[in-house]
Picture 1 (cartoon, rainbow, N blue to C red):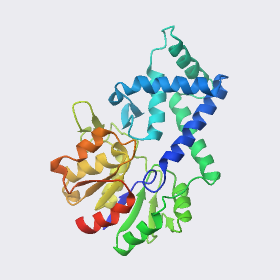
Picture 2 (cartoon, rainbow, N blue to C red):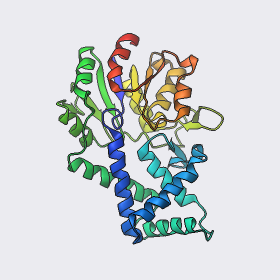
Picture 3 (tube, helix red, strand yellow):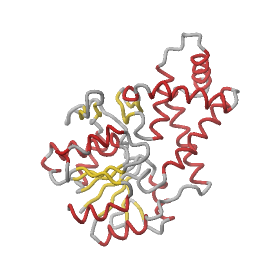
Picture 4 (cartoon, helix red, strand yellow):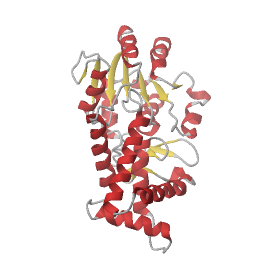
Length: 303
């Protein structure tokens, strides 16, 4: 049995790292704008308030399509906020829009785009978080990996994170993780699950969730990994990035007729994700778990 697993938010405590990244962004923007941190924090909080009115309209965009929706993932939310700032008309003389304009113009003095700024903050902050020794595996990582190995489940980490970050975290848990076959955990980092390729027409454009949300599916890099590995299970915490494409393949492609998807529920998991995966027609195909420790029993029972 093959298990494809996401990394951040599955094997790490993403909330602590996300808070660290957000604080890094606030401090960096305070420096770029020559304003204090409270000004930046209050302005971005107002952005969130505006976006929260219609969260389905916002997200982390890639090639003009939503890589993941606002509220699905704290790291993706950072990208969504700066996309919102970039697209918001700033001609109004309100204090709020003047503040947004100051942030946008200050960032663009140093970066080509707000998206570049957001991504740079992510890499700088997560690298710093790791270097300070704060990046830790979930407490039961070793126990779960041992159980999966004993059940002859091959574990493949397929993540947008870099390979060395993944190896580092598993090493802290006493687990050998590497790109090599035969490792306790095999790693495929830099998987580019967020890249939406409009020219890739082998599959439909999107998966319909409800009247407001259609999740883009044309993620060629991820599709090729899934086709190569042909897993029996896929677990992730961000539905759009991790599970939308595997679930579509399970429902529409004969080579994936036995595939199961597992959604790791986080405090940030949107209601629409939980509602969709709880549909009767997805029973014993889609599973919702609160911890990775539930995974070995699910695989044993349903493989």
